[in-house]
Structure formats: structure tokens, C-alpha cells
Image (cartoon, rainbow, N blue to C red; front, side, top):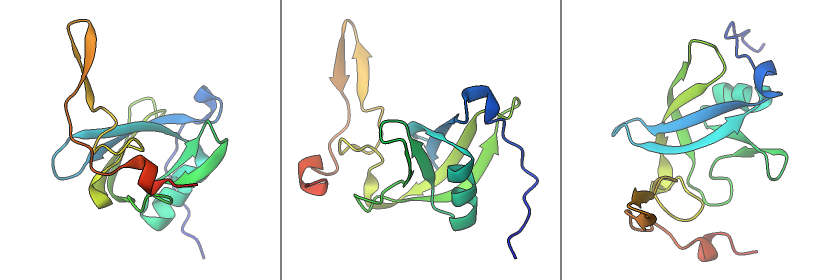
Length: 130
């Protein structure tokens, strides 16, 4: 019998979606920002693997389902308005970004341009062959 959770998230405020920040559990580095709907939130809590809602595909997705770079949930926090989630994760495979970088925030604003400040962990063309 599934456990009844008494965790309220305000999915209504964002038309069914809430922003989620993924942070490396060990280092504190911000890895990515994405969205969850209620189903993604419940699947994350149920499986211990972080699920998101893909706005571009309009579907639920398990982070790492294509690349193998799954996020194991270590801790979850909900903000004061109950409309933003922070997940602290163990990032398996070394990369959270679908562009092959450890973090989606691999570009730094330097003057009037963006500078890549991380090394690629994997080649996305190899991982996401279609």
C-alpha cells in the first residue's frame, strides 16, 4: 500500500509546474534547473531517482534515461511559498547537462561575452545518437 505523503507543493501557481534546482550533494554546485509536475515529484519521491517534466517534449522524463547520467536523490527541500523545489543529488556519470558538461551553468559572463569555464564530460553526439 503506497504511503500517503503530507507534502504540499503549490503546482497551481505555475500552471501545474514548479521550478526545481538540482544541486550536487557533495560539493554544493548548482547542476541544473528544470521543472516538475505532480507526477514527476511523486515519481522522484517513490523511486529516489529524479524525474522532471520536459516542457519541450511535453512529457515526464527520468533524468539520465538516455545518457545513463541519473540523479540519485539525497535530500529535497521546498521553499517558503511551496512553489520551488531544491533537490540535492548524487550525479551519476559525472554530467548533468545534455550538452555534455557537469553543470548546465558551464558558461560564465565575462564582459560582453560568454566564456566556457568547464570541460565537457561527454560528447552529446555520441551519447544521443538517433
